[in-house]
Length: 76
Image (spheres, rainbow, N blue to C red):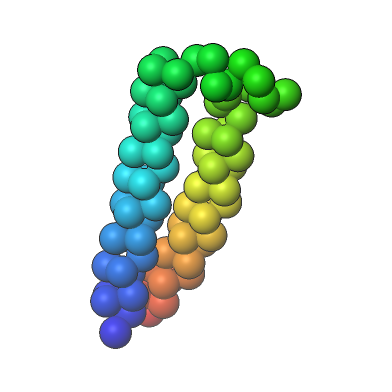
């Protein structure tokens, strides 16, 4: 059962990372295609990428902590 949870957490971490990379690339390409739309904003165009990056780091840290706890229980 713990191995299945560990496997699921691996999939979850990979999925979140892939979604972040994909959305960051999309936002960058959209900025390159339509730079005038981003001039009107008060924040830089890459701020949303930074915010989602921070959220990704938090999610990955939580997953790593869970994996460490599961790893200790699997060794016992």
